[in-house]
Image 1 (cartoon, rainbow, N blue to C red):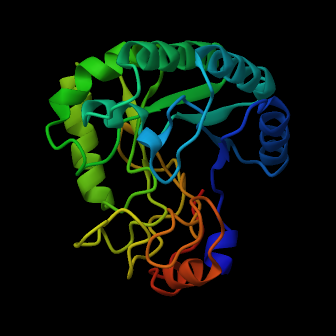
Image 2: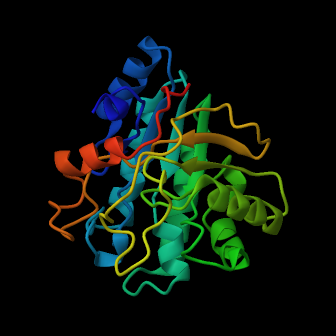
Length: 265
């Protein structure tokens, strides 16, 4: 389990009033000489009503959530991943979420969080297999405020390899016209994606991936991050507990199958 515990992982803020938790996480990371990685995850009609359904009741509550999130950041610095799946779900045809309102709320998040000094902001853009034609993401990401952000995040909570994710990321950067960068969630991609039904949900045989680091050797790739916390369930599939709950047996399997790598930077 040390392979999981010894490495920095993101903290997901999925409830109203996140400011105090944000402040505590940023301060704790700073004392350890690290930069906090935080996930804003409270968009209305979250997860298109699936395993991680929930989020803010309405636009006003979400704007207040983002404003409080930003107030907790301070000037120490943090990486913030904005709303995993929110853009890709819309491109894929999510029903029940008003596109115009969702994009406006995401743009509000990008603008508000980026105003905080030393904060890096990345809008989530799905993964290499979800929207195969990356050009379909260009309009939605622009509507969601990517011009105000540092770039986009890929592979959050998924299992596509670093190679597949970075290749997709470079194509998306070009499609957006350059000027943006990206981060990749490498927390559980050590064995690549599972081939089978519900490949995204607690797939068997997966492994920890590249340890978190900013030393990527790629000018467009800001960092490999562990955004999904290894060992947290994707949902009540394959015998797992509810989404986000700790599942020690799954964490142990990820660690046992991981390549022997020292913790990253």
